[in-house]
Amino acid sequence: MEASTAVIRSVDDVLDARAVTTVFQPVVRLDSWHRKRHETVGYEALTRGPAGTPWEAPLALFEAAAGRGRLAELDWICRATAYRTAIDAGLPPGLTLFVNTEPAALSVPCPPDLAPAILDAQLRLRVVTEMTERAIGRDLSALPALLSAAEACRGSGWGVALDDVGVEPASLAVMPFAHPDVVKLDRHLTQHPAGSYAARVVTAVTAYAERSGAAVLAEGVETPGHLTAALGLGATLGQGWLFGRPGPLPPDVGQRHAAVGVPFVAPPANPGGRTPYEIVSARRSTAQATKRMLLPLSHHLETKALDPGEPAMLLASFQEARHLTPATARRYAAAAESAALVAALATELPGEPAPGVRGTAIGGDDPLRGEWNVIVAGPHFAGALVARDLADTGPDEDRRFTYAVTYDRDLVLDAARALLHRIVPT
Image (cartoon, rainbow, N blue to C red):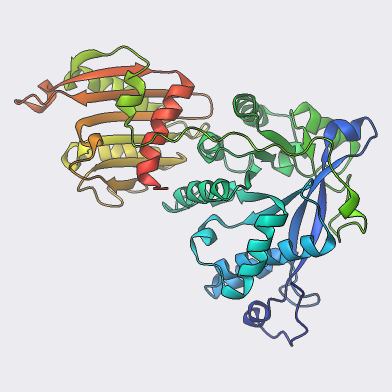
């Protein structure tokens, strides 16, 4: 893809002419640089608009395209241009190409004229798709779009990177569900690594990387001091002006390779239609209790999702919409003010049963219909109450359930995925 020579008078002209270009910034192994053996493991593709126009800077270009309702189209153009430029330059599959995307754009069909470049890339390049944590916000569709996009990329055999980690605290709770192969620490952490917030980010990222085998990449490495900080943060990969500014790929890039490439980690097991109760009870003993006895346990878990300093994901299934009482709806709306995601599932539940709460209606024949589950997964806390209704008659709070409570992080995450797969179908 080459920038068109057509006259550019508006952002529509830029998009119609596919008039964007790609520059590349190296990604290096930090230990190799520290030993003065500079080893490049890949390149990040960065988009530029037509030189000398108001849309040359990527931020201005994307803002203008969004204003015209053409953001997804621009995203496809940028990725196709990056792939074609890398292929034409001879980038070998031994080096990894990092390419940014807007998660929501992956749900929009590829423009037909760009499809050949996308298909060619799938055959000839090793790609890591970067998805920014800035997509996580009050838009109820943002996080599900990110999770769905991550699944789609892995399904295509490509890797996933979570970008700008550290800017939005909620991203730390999202990490194990997006399950990135690469976690990219925001440049602010690299350049200002001291402080309690940086410590919380580093401990959460380190724990995720240790469990999953993901690589940690420090952005914004511009000085030897930044390099020292990046190594102290636990990063194994780095990117920044110290290693190279954005520009064309080297003329000899086709002869380059990485002794140790960027690994792709094994994805978590698909819950396969199982429910949280089925997952947890298979590994933990259960007991019986009335709803009245279980309510304090539920409320205790819900309070763990209220800490704005450590935003969590709060996922719950209520059997029927009537069990999401006004008092419960208020608690969940309060949690949604800072949580990464607050979601509720029940029969006949609307899409937003409370402000900021994502609702998912389940069918009456869904096995989840017989369960009451409350699951909280944050950067450093994870807990789940899973309960199965014994179908008693009589007063609501006297209904009996078989239940289990677990704080085993891996088990809680497995249970949470069982609900997420109903919220974000794959």
